[in-house]
Image (tube, rainbow, N blue to C red):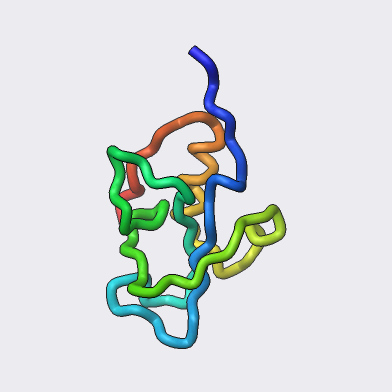
Length: 93
């Protein structure tokens, strides 16, 4: 079975804007979301399982953005697991 190709291009960052959405993380955190939705997944969730804001501000992911101190720790853990080829469920929050 071929190994899936992993790339930062498969993800986007959700950047907090001036109004924090009540349904999203209540801290000014940067979250990761999969660029391409999966049929078995939830379309309105970040990698850590949090709900997306109503009007998310998204930008591409690069290596420098992964060093952002505001990056959600749980999103980073899921990203690292997916990088190793694992398909983790959302961490228990």
